[in-house]
Image (cartoon, rainbow, N blue to C red; front, side, top):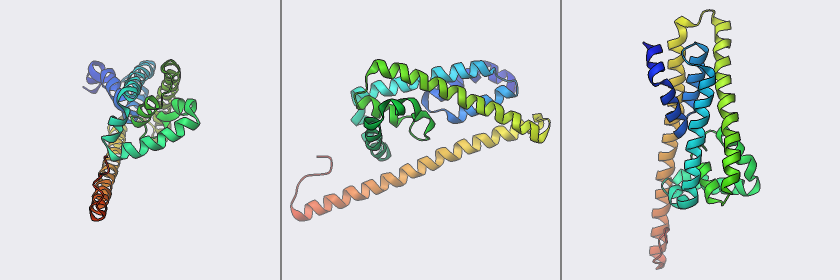
Length: 210
């Protein structure tokens, strides 16, 4: 049943997952490739195209609507401002490596586009970065399966537990980030309200947005 499902939908799910933000799904795919349910070479290729396409989209959205996108979430705004500082100092290094810094997958391409980084150069270096990321993470997950099998013997009876553990880990990281975003949003709102109250008390009509 699992093999048929992965044959029908596995690579499409991998493409969608890596298009949006897919560390967890790529790790799962790498482990499943070790178990023989997926092909490791196809896993790398699909993950590369998903990641590459997603980050190209965010980059071009950043060039046209960067500030509006970052302003949608308080955490994005703060991280975007910090990302712009890093990009201005070491632009090529960040284009190549941002995928390996958890939580920057969406914000960094937007900031890179907003910074005015050349499209042709981004097209090339983003492709190199996506290839390194897809190959390294898939290979690491594949060898993680080999290490587990060396420790546990036949891993077949444990594979559902391993897959469940990886899913729980990915969900835990996602929830942690969501809660962090929610706390940050509340803090930013409280700061804005305090600033409005301070300006009202001093007779300054301007708001933070102005």
